[in-house]
Image (cartoon, rainbow, N blue to C red):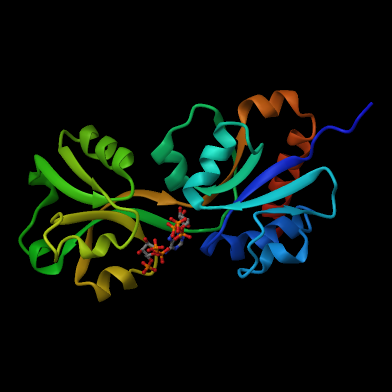
Length: 220
Ligand SMILES: Nc1ncnc2c1ncn2[C@@H]1O[C@H](COP(=O)(O)OP(=O)(O)OP(=O)(O)O)[C@@H](O)[C@H]1O
Ligand SMILES: O=P(O)(O)OC[C@H]1O[C@H](OP(=O)(O)OP(=O)(O)O)[C@H](O)[C@@H]1O
């Protein structure tokens, strides 16, 4: 009988990659050297297990590859999972990396005389229009979102939108751009995601999920 095709794990490039590498190692996955070389143009990588390959894609695309079954597993922020809301995804393991929060922020001067409890309509620049609209709808506020893919912090001073919804970790980006956090929407960490169909059809998936679970416990 021929070998099944390798399982594909989608890993985001950017900041999560560095935190994911030790986790992959503890899960027994050793990628070829080019994987941790930011200068490499390769997108798909072999590992020392012929049954496992890695792909390196943009953070938001990890969820899309896995939801459509193009990759069977992935590592992605809970912010991205929430924004897409793909029903095909199962997120069984909190990997304990990529800690940050998704928050509403506005200019310091505006915050001085603003009360979020009084809002009935907000205009917000964000990369997360679905999470933002759902958050505000739940408390009876109508949200008008301007979709940006980065540098949301520029929106208030340039008149694009008076407020933003963005990720905050140290708070340095907000501070340096004259903004202040006024409301937290969600706490974020990276999760292991699995395609639900692959979980049933590919017997190697469940042991791999367990390997990640043990890798997290070993690093705690
Ligand atoms: N400041 C931060 N601190 C900790 N984790 C973060 C921070 N910013 C983002 N993250 C987490 O890392 C993930 C990827 O963010 P990153 O900034 O690397 O990608 P991006 O620049 O938004 O993506 P792309 O360049 O592909 O559009 C986010 O979805 C989030 O879960
Ligand atoms: O609170 P801080 O520690 O300053 O982190 C917050 C910043 O981190 C993320 O951006 P990132 O650095 O990933 O840049 P990008 O989204 O513009 O690519 C986020 O979009 C904020 O701008």
